[in-house]
Image (cartoon, rainbow, N blue to C red; front, side, top):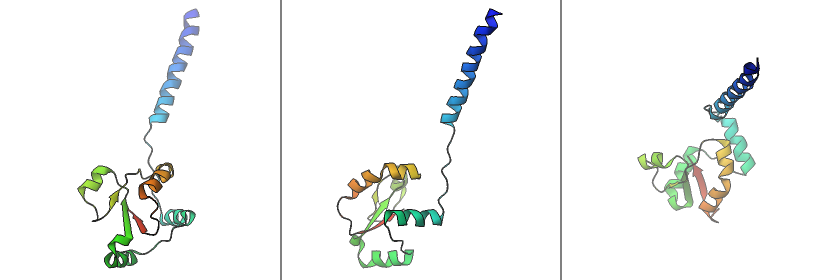
Amino acid sequence: MKKWTSIFPALAAMALTVVFVWYIERPAVPKQATWDDVVAEAKAGGYRIISTTELADRYRTSPTAVTMVDTRQDWEFRTGHIEGAVNFPMEPTAWARWRRAGDLEKFLGADKDHLLVFY
């Protein structure tokens, strides 16, 4: 009888450990952003959304007035990007964007008069 009283807590602890490890290591699929999410984030950040036509016109008129920030990973940036774009790798989650917002501000510097494009 004494054997079962020591085995049961050990099995329970092992089962709890397995469940806990599975829970924290499970794959997390980021939510796909909708247009409403983009509009809400732009409004919260004080950004103005422009059309791709307006962006193309501005880029053709004065490419130096448009700072394009490519937020894809380094290897994706190396496979091809828009001429003049700078790479600032960032995970595609709200947590990553919030966590790296200060880093992005330092990366861009004080030059806030430019039109910024993230892709």
